[in-house]
Image (cartoon, rainbow, N blue to C red; front, side):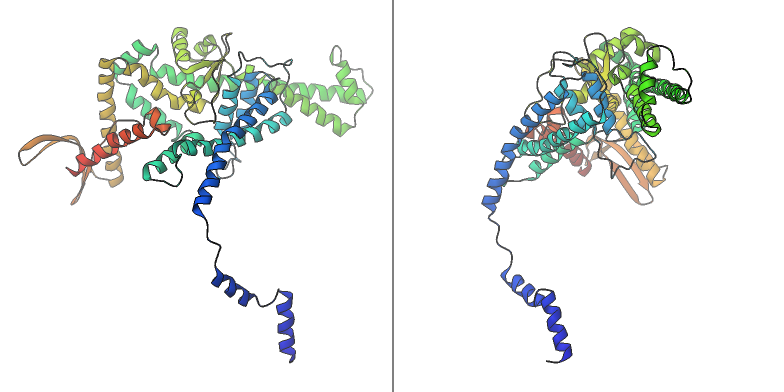
Amino acid sequence: MSGRAKRRDAKRKRHGGNRLSEMRIDRVAGPKPIDLDEYWRELGEYLDSVPERIAELKERLVVAMAPYDAFDVISNVLFANLPLNPETYRESTHEGLAAYAECAALVLLERSDRRGTAERGPIGKDEIDSWMPLLREIVGLSSFAESRRVTPDLPAQDPLSDIRRRIVTRELFLRNPIYDWQEEATLRGLFSDDRVRADILGLAGFDLDDALAIVQAFTEIGFDRLRDRREQALAYQHELTEAVERCRAGGAPVDGEEDEVTTALVALPAREAAKQIETMAIAWIFYATGDTFQVTPEQLAEQTGVDVRRVGSFLELFSVEFGQPAFGSAFTGQHVLRQRPVVRDGDGNHLCTYTGNLLFALRHQIEDPLKRNSAAWERYNRVRKQYVEDNAVAYLRAALKTPKAWTNLKYTIDGEGPYELDGLVTLDAVAVLVEAKAAALTGPARRGAPLRLKRDVETVLEAASSQAER
């Protein structure tokens, strides 16, 4: 055998024989056929086991959170999931979800009140790190449970089933579908008409300006207090550090209760003492975080300048109390905290579980009392219809850079009509016809209810499409 042949043979042995021949044999043999019936059966069995696993995880979570004040737990879990540093936040890598804080809050709302079983103390990183895997798994498994609920016959998939599955999954994970400023602009366009404003005030007890001011105040009050606590903690850290250094230099210890603390710190190595002081300062910032972020109607009224009775009406519409029923076999995107994100404790204190939900709940909750009054609803519906049409045409006109745009045009076809065209935008020889529908996807449709979803699609998409074709 030549030297070249020997080297080739040695190389083949090192790499496991003639791999090309083996690949050809595997390719000819092909993969083992999948038994689809067996696949669907096993998948169905797994999905059917998910609610039991969720119940097990939830019970572990109840036990783990039991010692702690409910407001403290909600605040800390929310902090653990919010992107608090805009300099380092990246949407693609941020793992936090508001849904985790909502899930924790729903579990805690099953209590009779906010109190924990142990004396109130700080919640540390270890506690939060022990809760988060449970919350993540509950929410993750709930996406499977929700998909199973809306598509129980797995092999028989159809377009409507696929839409239902996508809707319930989106509702489970997605919050704030648009930027805050866009939602606020929409709210002002819908609810700022004088007659509509008067109807809202008469039926709900507050107006849109009141509502937006209160939403902002929930954030401002809490974070102003947190900044104050941070300043106090930094001052305490500085004073304690100076006291320890004085004692190390042979000076007298500080007077009062802190003597023991200072003495204990002096006994530690300098680096360890500094770390301990920093830990104590951080613990002070986040001690009783629920109290830091809770508010009373009077505090909201003082912060916003809104009459306290209007604040009370707002809180009544947007809050829930402890003693709520269990969230069921899975966490869903259509739970009570999506529309009523504020928790009240029975002592006049209110905690917002997530202010993003509060802003995006305004439209639905303000519309709700209007719906119960036919005259008020009709006045609002006219404003809503005009708002949608005007904005649709305005966006097209701006995008196409043309001044030729109209709304509410009348036309006839072979002498029949008149019919109405919601919008018309022209650019050179191109005409864009606009048919708009001022209707929202209803709550049952967001839960994946097939008949209601079908009706909503027909009402909004099919009706507008038919009118445009005409």
